[in-house]
Image 1 (cartoon, rainbow, N blue to C red):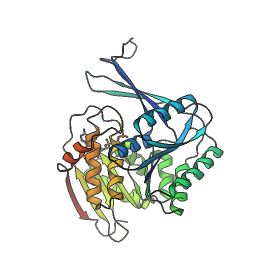
Image 2: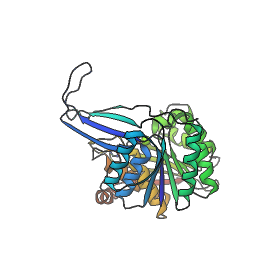
Image 3: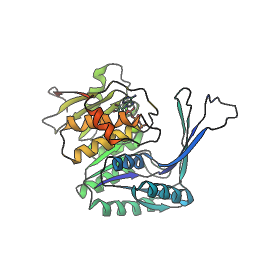
Image 4: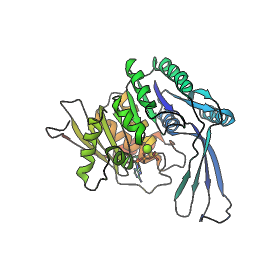
Length: 319
Ligand SMILES: Nc1ncnc2c1ncn2[C@@H]1O[C@H](COP(=O)(O)OP(=O)(O)OP(=O)(O)O)[C@@H](O)[C@H]1O
Ligand SMILES: [Mg+2]
């Protein structure tokens, strides 16, 4: 079983508004609500891929109840620790004319150290049945930057490898706890290593830096696929998996679908190259659907054959 962690679950409301302009009054032509937050989206994608998964997290109040109902409707298993207040609602405005998507995310309820302790106990209990854990997204207000680092350490103690996908200080602190994999996108990776990528080689230098910062393996996702540094300290391999970018219906959440595909493949024992190719296929396929973490497993199978994968041993001296 795979666990996902979402410390700031959300109700995602998506509205379609043609030719939206700031300062004007608009009429939405379509609206939908789904349960959201990065780990929840990863769980949804894993469910679509037929993987046993439990979405763990913190939820609050009436919005938390609604999020649980929606997950129940989708038959995604969840285990949320209740906290005070009300879970956040995130608004996503899609302009069907241009395909552009604008996101407005609320901060979410304030959490306490005691909330995080209760959650950690629960997570460690669930980890008894887990092969892998995906920790993704931002921290809720009130959580210290090392909150993910603490979860990673506790999961390491019980032998559950963690994939971490977050940004900023929680990412830097999290890496010090030695997660099995980190998988930022380009902007998040630039922030973590402290410089902008201008040359293709910069991506590979950044992967080495992410590993030096504590991650066992590192992946950076790009719009055309991903680059990764895989393998142990004495046998590191640089891998690149690419796909011709597709015209998208909605690209938000493609990183979450990537994570689902990657983790499913890892659990199945595929090679690092195979895991990355399947992850990229899932990310790409998910861009053909509106909801975050929504994908069609049959189409993923078709796209995998279109992914080009190359790998070379990392040059001597790379971490
Ligand atoms: N237009 C596209 N065509 C094909 N694949 C895409 C496209 N956009 C994204 N992908 C795939 O999805 C994966 C994740 O992409 P990206 O790095 O943009 O995610 P992200 O920024 O983390 O997204 P989010 O945080 O919204 O989930 C990549 O592996 C990429 O190949
Ligand atoms: Mg992402």
